[in-house]
Figure 1 (cartoon, one colour):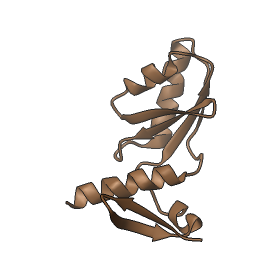
Figure 2 (tube, one colour):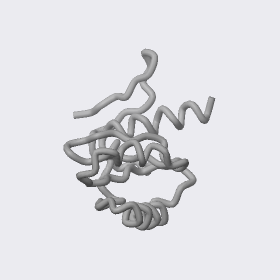
Figure 3 (cartoon, one colour):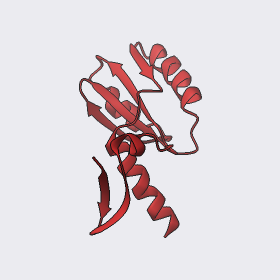
Figure 4 (tube, helix red, strand yellow):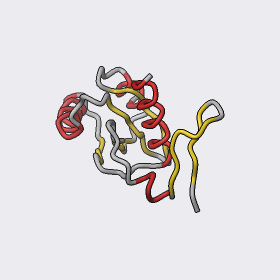
Amino acid sequence: DRLALMEAGRVITEGTPAQLLARPLKSPPIEIATDDAGCAKWLAAHPEVREVLPRAGRLRVRLDAHADPQQWATQLQADAAARGMQLSVDIHPGAELEDVFVAVLEEQAAAA
């Protein structure tokens, strides 16, 4: 099976799901698990954060392309501990097709 990702009626990339998911992402996703209800709003206020999406009981975070995920995660955990928040961070959760689609759209916009 093959997938085609389209924008405005034109194919912008295509391939098997495995091929699409294997694409390197300039802004790989990070997943955060926490029971703190205010965590999503707190994360969204960080200047390096592009978006925070709830996914299956976790928060999926996309950083700006220039941000270092490991450094950001380390600082995030220190900041959270200082606030009394408990969270765990996975900087390698694996891409989803939505992540690939967003990355391809951003590449298209940057090239225009």
